[in-house]
Length: 125
Image (cartoon, rainbow, N blue to C red; front, side, top):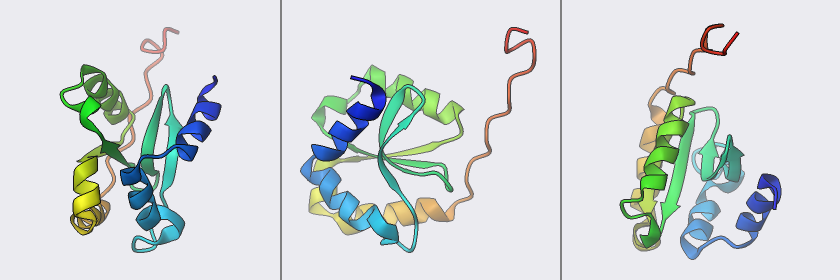
């Protein structure tokens, strides 16, 4: 399955926590901010992203606890100029107001600088 088709499948099978969070983030409902869900970025698919603020929001279940794959993924996304916020599913379900407040605070911070393009040597030219 290609990445776009997989992202579409993820949008159709969101967890309860992702659905709750999306209800608040979709259609500019969170302070007029635009988020996308299950968005491909490079080799990864992120749960939610605000491209203007370069902010990624992830809803995590227990399988993400101490995951080396998540650490490598987050490092790559940071190299691309994104900030990543991770919330446990149970925190989203039990206290969505606090999660949304944290996201709003992050949106008020200036977006991280975009990565500099590689030099000719770095590109292998």
